[in-house]
Length: 191
Image 1 (cartoon, one colour):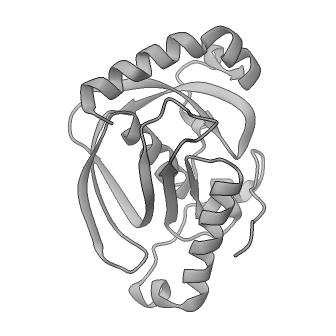
Image 2 (cartoon, one colour; image 1 turned 135 degrees about the vertical axis):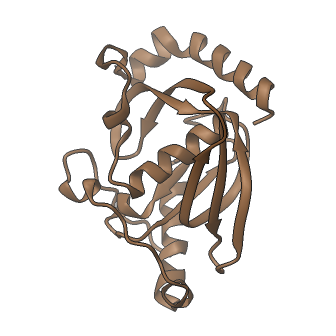
Image 3 (spheres, one colour; image 1 turned 180 degrees about the vertical axis):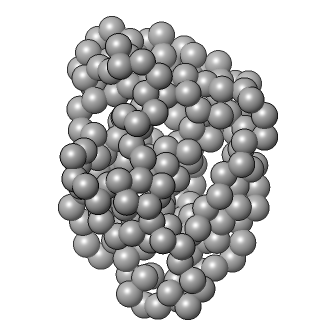
């Protein structure tokens, strides 16, 4: 396995829309090795997720995992989940103003409105179907990663540029209030 370089804001390929993966492509040893590298890179960077486009591979593949993440200690646990060709469908209009950061936008956070109840369809890394609902703060994480596959960064969806903050300023001035709101959302949805 290898730790891959993560492209940062301004790299033109972060705006590319990723292509769907066929079952034949997914089964290739090269694709399976890439998925291992994607996981290794996400874990090395302490990310809650990582999309293939962030490492300049333009396939609809992303990884999500939250397990005692030092960058997001308030996030509920999410076991390692590989999504291939994910489709997210909102289940209602309930939204949460999430303070998001991104490995491709180092040092910056901003507020993004995210659906709190989604239906997910995708394949896992073996091509088995995933068909389930994703709720709460976890739904925000999944939306963030799938946005990357559509060529979008959280900066493209920031509600108000006045909410942009450095990580240090977030921790000094906004952390406690945000974590309180996040914990209320987690309590409401159990995730």
